[in-house]
Amino acid sequence: MIINSDFHIHSEYSYDASLPLSEIAENAKSFGFRKIGITDHVNFNDKSFLGDLASSAKGVGEFRKTHPEIILGVELTPIEKPEFDYIAKRGTREGYIPPVSEKLYEIELAVTKEQLIEHGVRYAIGAAHWRVDVPNGRKLPADRDAEIREWYRQQMWLANDPRVTVLGHPWWNPSGVWYEDFSVIPRSMHMDIAESLLKNKKYVEYNSSGLFDNKSEKFRMQYAEFIRELFEMGIPVTYGSDSHKQYIDKRTEVEKVLYEVGFREGDFSEIRDEDLWVAEV
Ligand SMILES: [Zn+2]
Ligand SMILES: [Zn+2]
Image (tube, rainbow, N blue to C red):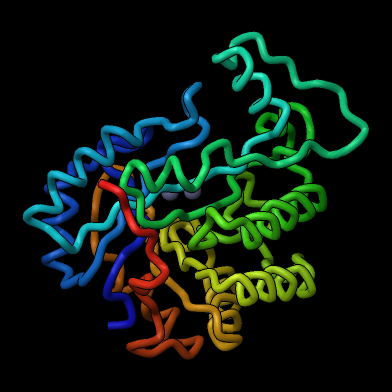
């Protein structure tokens, strides 16, 4: 099998997921996975910016006593700097009105690496989820070129941020503006991101949820070729199922595409011990 571990799973502790750790551990064992990473969302869904991290860390900590193959991670989402500043000052996002700005909003991750390590976190996935460059970026109608520029900006930023271990689901996009033809994204953008990942010794994720499920055969191939190219440049590739509600083995279908673009057993990577943060709890 090409896929032998899974570093992107949301547990019952994530505000948007319902998978019990026991079910994750049991299923992962039946799939023959060697390592599994729990990556609940942290930095945007509450005013402390730590989200459900305390309960996630406690749950995983308990579980690790009998399941040492489980590793505590988090998923970080870029947020807009003015919103962060507002919440940091007032303790709530209530009443926040996006300010008019000449320039694009800056990007913020809201939590420090030290805070994460204090909670026992060993690594972070950083992933773009919505526009943070302009006011109300989540609610704007689809705009392909603007979204390409913004995803590029966020992903470049994540590829250069020391809090990020793995660039999560690159080019996943809720409005799907490049899912019909992935080649609308300029190659130079892929190369820039790849260079930063290489330079900063980061991993890239192949995500079978957001970038495989319900996608066309054409897109699946284009996307797998893109990941293969990063792999051939020397960027280690991790697998992420990004499971939220159920934990199933999709490898038969997924690996068919991976094989077609040249992946073989041993090509997908685990997060190496030396790249995991040393947890304090
Ligand atoms: Zn995500
Ligand atoms: Zn996720």
